[in-house]
Image (cartoon, rainbow, N blue to C red; front, side, top):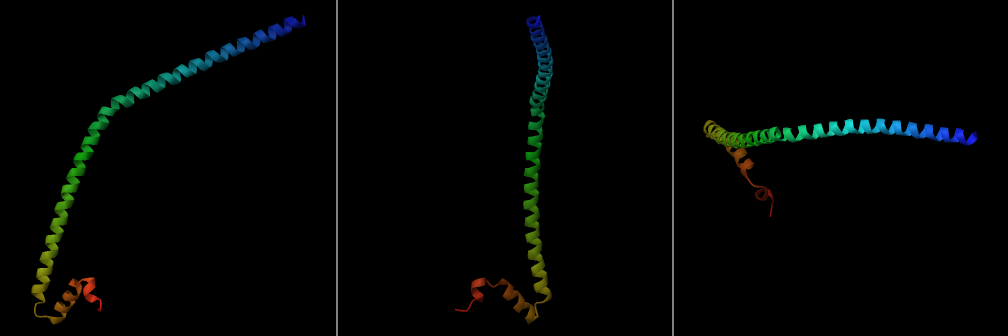
Length: 112
């Protein structure tokens, strides 16, 4: 009688383990399907990301060109500003002295 109870208990444990295994395999299949779906979407969205990458590269090139033009414009404006200030202060010795000090190199200021 005890042997039958032990066998019945083992059979019950085996049955519970098989049910749990079926549940886990079902969840694993669901997760696997979700993973494959996400992977497929990522592959298909890759085309769109390549288009977006090309768009970003175009924007970068445009930005670099605009920045170069702006820097050139700023240099030209600085040149015109200096000419204007020189023309206004052409008779002022203090202005010429100040400009001369600004344009000296570091080595010219050092005593030998």
